[in-house]
Length: 80
Image (cartoon, rainbow, N blue to C red; front, top):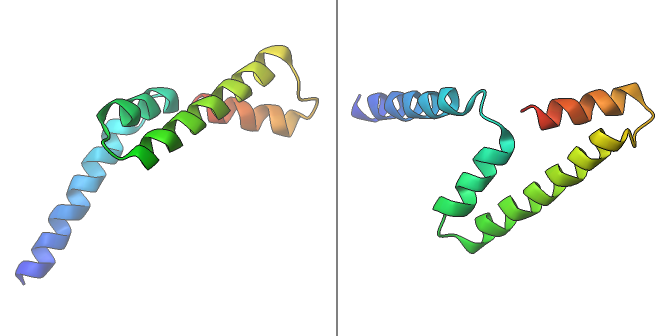
């Protein structure tokens, strides 16, 4: 029974973390990973994702995509 309650506590903790991150821009979350992680692979992955977000931002600003579906997807990525 102890094992079951431990699983519930873990799920509850993950739910609280998820609620905390909802509504926060992806770029801010990635910067937090870069600043708080001690794992070089995670730091590099966050840097690469930030570079990708910058490319999407430039594409969004310049209207690079002619497809409405692509433009909407880029907008959704940038607002997450």
